[in-house]
Amino acid sequence: MTSFLIRGRPRHATAHIRVRVAHAVLGAVAGVWWLVLPVTTAAARVPVPPATAAGRQDGTSVADLVLPFTAVAVVLALAGYGRLRRTRRARTRTTPGTVPAPPPAPGPAGSERQARAALRLADDCVRTSREELSFVRERFGEQRTEPFTHALRAAETELAAAFAIWRRYEQGLPQDPGARQQALAGVIGRCAEAGRHLDARAPELDRLRGFGAAAEGLGAALVVAEGRFRELTARTVTAQHTLADLRQRYAPSATASVSGYVEQAKDRLVFATTRLNEARQAADAGDPGRAVGRLRAGEGAVAQAELLVDGVERLAARLREAAALAPAARTEADTRPPAPHPTPAGPEPHRPADAETEAPAGPCEGARVPVAGGGPGGRDVSAGGVREEPDAGPGDPLDVLRRAAGRAAGAGPGVLEDAALLVARCAVAGAEEFVAVHRGAVGVAARARLAEAARELGAGHAGRADAAARQARELAERDVRAYGTPYAGPDGDTAGLAGALLGGILLPEFPDAGTPAAFGGPTTRSRHHA
Figure 1 (cartoon, rainbow, N blue to C red):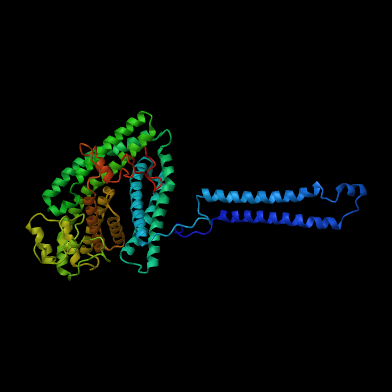
Figure 2 (cartoon, rainbow, N blue to C red):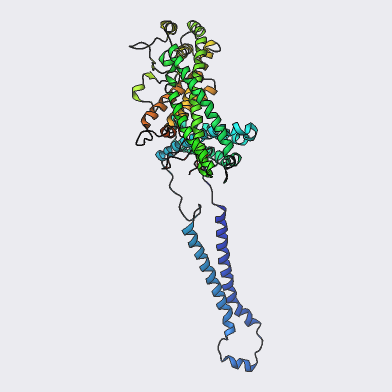
């Protein structure tokens, strides 16, 4: 953690000082020698023949003036050379030194903006690197890709630490202004370290994949991407039938979290079709640079379509588990004393005022559930309320487990603890999928809540993990609504380009909207720019 600390004087600055001192000493020695030389000469002077003495005509010979003039010329030359070097360094300096004053430190508002930008960029780099690495691992296996897996894990660790610091900062900790500034510096430093881990391995990954000047590995990479594309096309059709069946068996709230997933998966596959075909054509035409860029865009679209289809399949499996566990959870909830509904610790600075009395919709719950019992439209959170809803028709098994576990929160091992973990895992996975496929629009607030949910789930705090994940999902959905349509041509969307920008598959900072995100940190992720 020294990357963002204040550094001392550069080593080469000391060398420049030594050169100047040497020049000054040399000039002083030459001057003293010039002054002392006549005295030493006079002390050892021998008689001069009369003829020679007469030839001097009481004046100074030319030989006596050579040495002083030479010494003066040397001193002036050295002084002029030193001044010229100092002037040239002052004009062309590109590294920190002693001459220019350091830039002023940013204030709290500026540091917050830098920290937000660093968190979002580092999170995008980690997600993109994870997606590309899945294709590399499928081709080369675990052993040959271990260095890249290690770099990705190191980056994930740094990013998780940065989000933890940021979350505490959002909660007002620490309170001292100086310590808060240091916390922001820590966030920025951790994000920079995460990016360095990925940047260091990016060139090696390209060499492994054969993405050099000739791009020898393009053919094999295209085979892997096209194989996953074909498999995913069949799975998307199956997911569509699965979702239709879930909607018939359960309440609308049970499937609201994956609403639109199949359509978005199809959109990503349309984009992948276009880009993979263009990659194949560019490779056949001998244009490896364009082929690699199109391949990476197609791989990103395939990876996100796979996430969306996985989301539908995951929800179907979790609903089956919840339906099997619900009777035992209801029975145990009847015998447990009531407990307060779990809420996430700390303030919620990004939560809207009109949501103060409602819990945010989570990845396994479409409708908002009022936190306070009673009132019009409210549902009873007592054991009787848990027991009554499934008897009225198709229900939401995950919601039943959530309310049953909430009634007896912290009761210890048992059916309700299993129910709480099942609900929390579903909530965290759903929020993760949503953020991943909409990361072009999702801000730092949602990402920080998602990181908090993952930490709480890893610590075994199911209730807090569920609540944080549901907040992350609500904030992410709000960001996507505010983002709007990222791109629209004269006839609307062009071959899934809007979804590719929304998903962060293409980097929006380039005007041609055709640069794909690749494995790497901030300095290497856009290296496949055409």
